[in-house]
Amino acid sequence: MAKTSSMEKNKRRRKLTAQYASKRKRLKDLANDLKKPAEERFAARIKLAELPRNSSKTRIRNRCELTGRSRGFYRKLKLCRNQLRELASQGRIPGMVKSSW
Image (cartoon, rainbow, N blue to C red; front, side, top):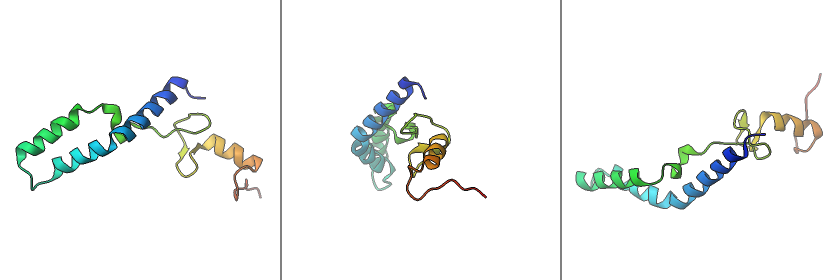
């Protein structure tokens, strides 16, 4: 089980990302628009830099829904490899069976 503080920090990051998503997108579009004057684009980049760092989507770490483990993460199932294997062995994931031969 991962540290609770790490999991809570990640939840705060997800919340901030959702909160600032529209503002960040608008500023990025303005900063990358070559039709705008250079001063306006520079001002947009300054405002973008003033936003909280944790509001950036790249700061979010994918973590297992059950344990909070960050390594060996399967995006489709939102589980780490350990929990995936355990649940598959118990037959709790539809359509997935542990192979044996």
